[in-house]
Image: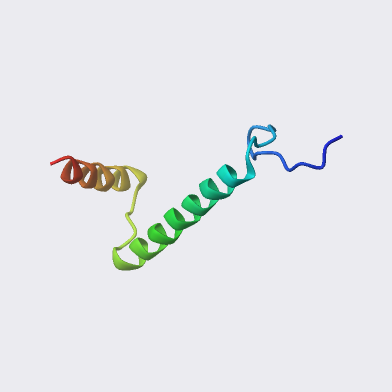
Length: 63
């Protein structure tokens, strides 16, 4: 049995820990940005309202 940590949700061993580390760092940064965004904006009443808000943001980025 291997002592190598498994990738959550897949049960697979990571091929390269540097890649895994960069993915985890990017995920952490995304969570930080989301946390700061929720402090600046009111939390939506529903999930659909959140999706509408995110959709509007993506449309603005595409223009």
